Each structure stands twice: as structure tokens, then as C-alpha cells.
Amino acid sequence: MPDPAPARKGFAPARTLRDAASLAAAGLLPPGADLAALSAVAARYAIAVTPAMAALIDPADPRDPVAAQYLPDAAELATAPHEVADPTADAPFTPVPGVVHRYPDRALLKPLLACPVYCRFCFRREVVGPDGGLLTTEQLEAAIAWFARTPQVREAILTGGDPLMLSPRRLAWLLERLGEIPHLEILRIHTRVPVADPGRVNAALSAAITIDKPLYLCLHANHAREFTAEAAVALRRLTAAGVVLLGQSVLLRGVNDDPQALEDLFRTMLRHRVKPYYLHQLDPAPGTARFHVPPAEGRAILSALRFKVTGLAWPTYVQERPNGGGKAVVGPVWGDVAAETLATG
Ligand code: SF4
Image (cartoon, rainbow, N blue to C red; front, side, top):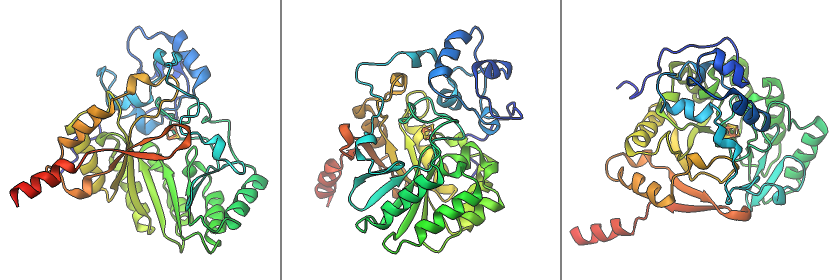
């Protein structure tokens, strides 16, 4: 069965586009776009649209779900009253630079804060960007030492930024060092690279992630169209390297806020050996209000898929609690299913 929304034959620039003028020159902005306002957005929140993602955007479609994720909007300059700079409260849970320890048995390691693309709804948008957040070797050593002296932590989750933006050599070194820690039973990488910049998943990167310990890779993707032929090759390389693929998505107004879009996304993930793991409620980062979908609506959208799709396609719909309280399950609510089952025997 072909993908429900195959890649469009768009214009692929030769390099990643990083400012409003480049986006305009590539024909990706709507006619009459306010370049001054978009440049003001770019001065505050990093922009990056890779050639792979630019090629997916249909400039003639004002509701293009790929454009919505990556193209800046003047609305980002307005911060709503409920929005906060650090919605997941990483800072209070940071014992050493780059480490976030929020849950007993697992901790984050953010080796860098650069990404292949900069999502307009990013929960870490105040800190991610091409220039910042690369831990020095000394800081990485200190982070590794923290994991080594914290035996209750059984899982290291590499995130950022995007860990697959590290050079294969650096990534291999880091995974090897973490793998040497006996109580770290599994390693995990959170990444957007296989869809946003699939060419990075080359032989060197495949070799870097071929390790002895179980390695889970959590792929961030929000629309079926992101799974291009090139992304399929990248994901196949990862599974061939022994990596277990999970999917995480954000419920986003104008991107995937209807049952058909989510069904297409989850089914497409499964066809690429990616198990949908989390559907995130949008975190209230500054200037992201246009993407907000109320939780009650999100529950209704997911409920529309009930019984329609295989259980393999079901992610857990979660929302971060304020002040670093961890994830709360938003839904769907299964009590009515139990009642139906009882009623029908
Ligand atoms: S890939 Fe993740 S960390 Fe990077 S901009 Fe997108 S949401 Fe933020």
C-alpha cells in the first residue's frame, strides 16, 4: 500500500535555509509576507528548513502541514499569558550541565542544542539554535561521570537539540562511554534527523550507532508526508543497525489535528517499522499558541480512531505537568470501553 500522502515534487534548495530572505528567495513564503516581521522572529527563534523539508512544501497551499511546522510566522512574536520559557522545567532538574534528572530510573543527556530543522512549536525554542549548547569534552566527561555515580538511573536518553547532529565519531565515542556504565541497561536517542535530513543517516552514522546495548531511537514526526523515500532508506539503515524505532508526535493545529491525519501518520510509522509511542499535548512555549489543540478535542480526535486502527498504531497521549512534574496521560479514557465490553459480554 503506498503512503497516503506521497512526497510532492517540490523545489529542493542546495542548502538549509536559515533566514526569511532565503525562504522568500526559494519561493516558500506566501505573497506579501512581512519580511521585516519574519526577520524579527528569526532574531529571536532560530530558523532552519533543510532541502528535504523544503522539497515537501507546496507554496501554493496555505494549509500545507509541512510549511506550518517550519516556516516562521509573525504570531511568534506574541507570548500568551500562559506561555513560559522553560515549559518542561529542565533547569531545576539539572545536576550537571547537559543532564536532566526528573524521573528515578532515567535521565536526559543533551550533548548539543542544534537541530537539523527548527520547529516553530519547539518546547526548547528559547535555548535551541545552531550556535549554542554544544557541551565541551570536559562537560561531557562530567555528565558521563554523573551517570556513572548514579546507579538508580538505568536509561540514558540522548536529546537536545538533536544528538544525530553530532559527528559520527563524537556520537560513537559518547555511546561507547555510556555503554561502559554497567547499570545503564538501555540507551535512547530522540531525533528528527531521519525525516528532516535523512542524508545524515549514512554508513558512518550507522556504524556509530551499532552498539552492544539495546538502543531505542525515538523519531519525532508529525505528518505522514514527512516519510519520504529518502527517510525510508534512513529508517531502514537504522533498523539494520539493530536499533528499535519508536515514534513521538505533537498534536498540532493545522498539521495533524484530525483523525485522518493521525491515522495516516501512525499507519505510515508502522509501515516504516516505527512504533507510535507518544502523542504529546503542545507544551506552552512562547509564541506557539496558534498550534494549540485543547485536550478535550485531542481526546475526541483519538477516540475517533478507536477500533479502527490496530493497537500497534496507538501512542499514549501525554501532557507535561507544570514545574517539571512529569507526564500526565491525557487519554483516551478507556472506562467506557470496559463498560461496553461488560454490556456485550
Ligand atoms: S527537533 Fe525537537 S528540539 Fe529541535 S526544534 Fe524541533 S522540537 Fe525543538
